[in-house]
Amino acid sequence: MNVKPDFSKGHSHAETSPAYLSVWNMESYYGESYIVQNISFNVHEGEILALLGRNGAGKTSTLRSIARMDSPQVTHGEIWLDHKPLHTMKSHEASAEGIGLVPEDRCIIPGLTVEENLQLAQIAPPIGWSLQRLYELFPRLGERRKQEGVTLSGGEQQMLAIARALARDIKVLLLDEPYEGLAPVIVDEIEKTLRIIKEQGITTIIVEQNAVRALELADRAVILDTGGIVFDGSASEVLANEELRSEYLAI
Ligand SMILES: Nc1ncnc2c1ncn2[C@@H]1O[C@H](COP(=O)(O)OP(=O)(O)OP(=O)(O)O)[C@@H](O)[C@H]1O
Ligand SMILES: [Mg+2]
Image (tube, rainbow, N blue to C red):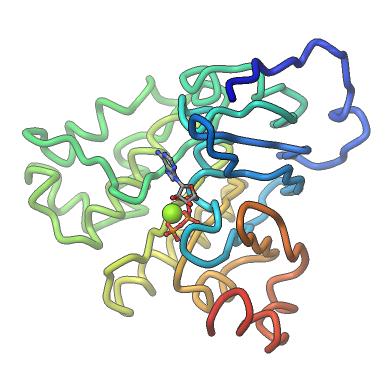
């Protein structure tokens, strides 16, 4: 099944939605496999949204669809960012519009120092974040600016991956399991940074297995189950709802 997306119908979902980032009836496939199954949700400007669900629920696929990666292929639906149609764009165009995806494997470039990794991502200040501003946000990276990026600890590599996204002029940060494999004290440090990033007006979607930590940070939550949405509401509501927690999040 390789249906070509038809976005020519002139649907004006963007005009009716007050949201900053809006995913509307989105469907995505890996080849024949129907993965993201007609999901719709909104994210408001400056909000942190936790995108949760069991293993294989479709969280990574949803982030990759929004970032307009080549796979999975979005075959139906619309994605709007600040009234711009991301669904018509390639990944580099979505990136230029301000989408910053930090993948689970962090993708630090071997052979380059911390600073070179950041410089490679940077578009000229003042459009993107300056190195000075990034090192203020992540002092550990400043201290290790000459160290090869791949030799950093797991937590420091996660910080570098986030800093690299910020080095561009991003509006939306898409984080795929940023706390994975990290000690609680490092999670605290990254969480603090994510709160500062929110204060700068950046909108965040965080995907996390550590659902409690993500819900404590987030304003709202969307829970996915086998490619569809089973909950969309406030983060505190999920924390308070034992049925939802045990059924979909195993917490
Ligand atoms: N490249 C691919 N080709 C085919 N199927 C894929 C591919 N990547 C993921 N899938 C399938 O898509 C479904 C959703 O995967 P996805 O990685 O989005 O889940 P997830 O919610 O991020 O899971 P996890 O919590 O384990 O990271 C799974 O059934 C997975 O096997
Ligand atoms: Mg995943």
